[in-house]
Image 1 (cartoon, rainbow, N blue to C red):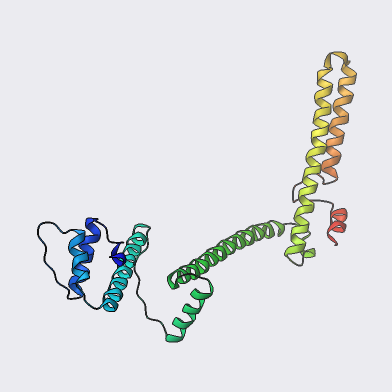
Image 2: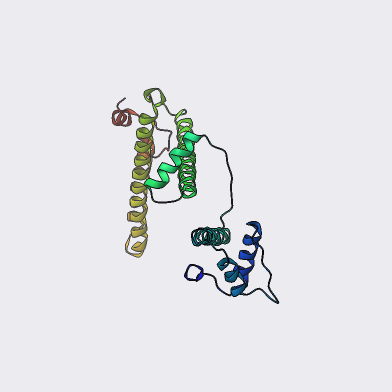
Amino acid sequence: MGGLSWITDNNKQLNWLEQYLDRKKIFFTYEGSLKKEDLTGCIERIEDPGIRLKFTLNMRAAWNKSQSRQRKLSDGFISQSMEIKKETQQQLKALALSNSCSQSEIISCLIKKDFDATALLKKELKECASKLSVANRQIKKLKSSRLTNKIPNIEAAEKHILTLEELVLNQRRTLSDNTIAMKDLKLENNRLTSQQKKEAKELYNKAKDKLYADGKIQLFGIKKTTQLSQKIGG
C-alpha cells in the first residue's frame, strides 16, 4: 500500500475521497463510520497494477489540487474563468514557464503592475493640476503689476515672483532692524534726555518715510521699477 500512504484517518479527506470514487463509478460498502482501511481496501481491489497506480496518482493529484484551491480561497483568492485567444494563451504559458510561476500568478502580476502605474499617473496628474492652479493664481496677481508686459512666459513670471518675494523679505528685515533699534533705545530710555529722544524718533521716522518714498515697502505695488526690471531682464 505504499502508493496509498498519503491517505490518513482525517474525516475531511476520507469524505472527499469517497465522493471522488463515486464520481469515478467505483462503489464500495462499509459498516459504521468510514475508515481509512475501507478506502484503501477498495482501491487495492483494482487488479491491474498499472491501472491501480495511475488511478492512485490521479486521485492524489486531484486531492492536492483541491487543498491548494481551499488554501487560496482562505487567503482571499477567488476562482475566475475567462476566454482568451489561443495565441494569447500560448504567450501566457510561455511567460509562466520563463518566470517559474503559474499562469494565474502572471495575470495577477500584470494587472497589479498596470493598476499601480495608473494610480501613479493619476497622482502625477493631480500634482500637475495643483501646480498649474498655483501658477495661474500667481499670474493673476501679476496682472496688476506694472511689470506684466515684461513677462513673456511662466518661467519669467516665476522669476519675477521670486524677486518680489526676496524684496518683501528685505523690507521686513529693514523694518525689523529699525524696530529693534527703537526697542533698544526704549530699553535705555532712562539714560536719554528729552532732546535725544526727540532726535531718535525723528531719525526713525525719516528712515521709514524714505523706504516708503523709494517704494521698497509696497508689496506688488512698486513705485520705482528700474532696479527690479533690471533683475528680471526688462
